Image (cartoon, rainbow, N blue to C red; front, side, top):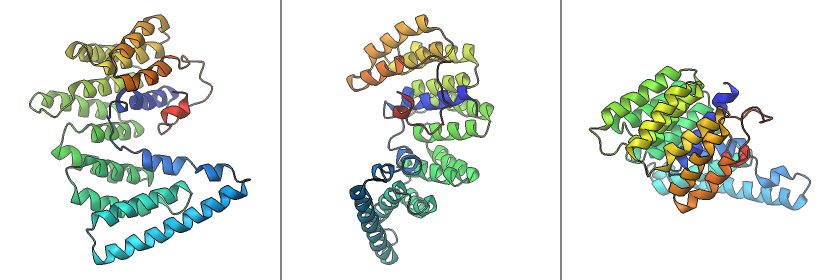
Length: 288
């Protein structure tokens, strides 16, 4: 994946997730896998090492306890959620593997089809395991019943881009928009922003600008397409054109997002970034 695409996949998160776009999203799994716990980062600290050992031991005890409950009550959702959280925390200490979170996620997704977050997390877990078809199937199972589900759309688009299939991602989003007029639960502006971002990831800048402009016209008070267009301009080195758009996005955004957008406006312009970003890089790790 190119550096340009990497940047844009990261910025999908900023442009959309700040508006509760991804719900609980994939951060628990991605964070647990990619980020060691603070105690592991400071191996020289005896106190931290002791704390880590105690926490791991406690979490392992919790896992065993939840597993005993589920042997008797396989659909006990309190135990399923507890097992999931404990195994995720163990992953943050580099204990266990991601395969362990898949069974409780599969059961929770089955028991709660109306809560797409479980299905999205399941898809991400499968993708981390290298099961791309399983991940795609998990996303499709959500989109079959909720075609406008933004959690699943974002995940599926990211998966398709990772597979070097931008045309399929565009087709999925355009189909969602085409059908959206008949569905009240489709956030058309969010889908348009995501579509524009896919175009931008392929350096199809005129198409991206056009889609963003359509979204701005549809809802002039929504900051997301304004922010996305500002990022697009800065990506092209059009710093002066981007500045008023960032200012407008700050003015339109809810108070809790203004500082984040202001930080985004100060990101380095293309060519000045020293390292390539990963699609899973959290915004704060990329200077956002």
